[in-house]
Image (cartoon, rainbow, N blue to C red; front, side, top):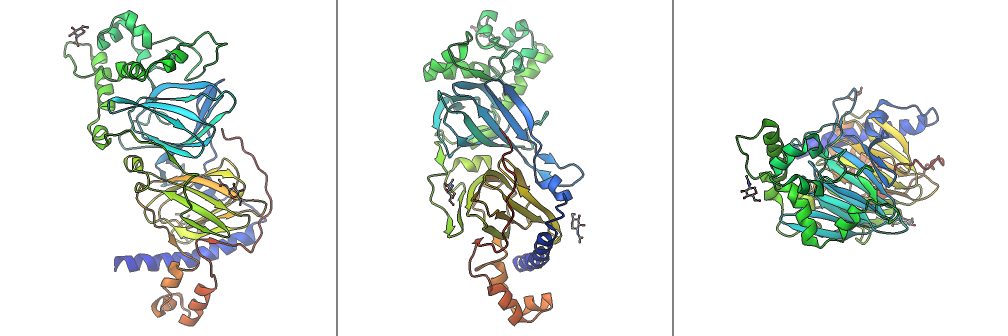
Length: 457
Ligand SMILES: *[C@@H]1O[C@H](CO)[C@@H](O)[C@H](O)[C@H]1NC(C)=O
Ligand SMILES: *[C@@H]1O[C@H](CO)[C@@H](O)[C@H](O)[C@H]1NC(C)=O
Ligand SMILES: *[C@@H]1O[C@H](CO)[C@@H](O)[C@H](O)[C@H]1NC(C)=O
């Protein structure tokens, strides 16, 4: 019964939503920025890391200014020049990577092993919270571009945007650098000479060139090591905090406790499977839905089990020019979208049926849609519209399509629903059956071409 009530609500929303969509088309020429645009279109990029070998930029999650809406994820764009390394670090949040361009090698500590993986275009890979990892672009000619989601869990500390702890190298960024070397060597129980082997002073920041022209080649050496040596290197820092000594200084103790909690958190350990995960290529996957107007792919934990841990889904959609993803709602998940190619329009409606946003989007734009907010994506008429994204549920997402064949509108076109709209059943049926396609629909109202190319990396 509860379900039926939700469905009825959705249908009511659908109608007011449709009215809003139509209204939006009519108002298109005036093209005002709605408040929703500020909330659902995330165009403000923050530099987290910037060096001459690469950058990492994010759009922040959290509460949207002036709104009760909470976005639980940061979306990050990592760009690395050929032959470069994102030095070892760890995050206090799960990291979900998607390789948009180029190829990479990543290494992370998984249980007690070094898990090294080669990543290629279209690959999805997860790195659990608190796992030390590095990223290498070993290609001599191609830039590496990665899109990632960084979950803001209740446990993450959320300093600044998110806290990235650089554990080796870069005295300027290492979390350990705040302590003097005597304190550290006591805390770690290693000599100060040994300490220097992983607190290596280098000033080029967290993303470094690996080319020979740079005399600072410690990281090339690090990468050239055998896996067990690399692991030892990473673990030296990770595993020092087994127990605290009450006689130690408070600061040292806190540091240990802090790292210990972070790295050996029960829940993290428990959730980790025995075997380090492999990668999953989204480009090689067959579409989950396909017709003449485009296709969509959705990846959940039943296809790729590491998603269970991060609690995220991943999807990819390709619409032919002018087509649209039928208006739908996600009853289970918040959805994020990143435009990979082409231009289009995103329309989002509040659950009360008022238009929230009708925005033109272009390559690099990030949008997000809260649960229960009806929305649709429309390709402009000048070419295909590709977007990739994350959702906050690893379970199979069952979007409710509001329009089209097999949509809610059709399954609910009984007399009681007709009555609730104040029209007769015949009329409702006629409206509901007018669209013979489903999920991805041809569009009759051509969109105008728009400006392109926002440099989002
Ligand atoms: C410190 O290291 C030495 C040997 O390297 C070892 O004998 C000693 O037990 C260690 N102390 C602690 C508190 O781990
Ligand atoms: C999307 O579709 C267009 C043709 O409509 C095609 O050229 C393009 O390669 C597709 N994108 C992907 C990622 O498959
Ligand atoms: C619907 O909700 C939005 C956001 O809370 C609000 O701005 C808008 O005024 C509401 N519309 C109506 C008709 O209540």
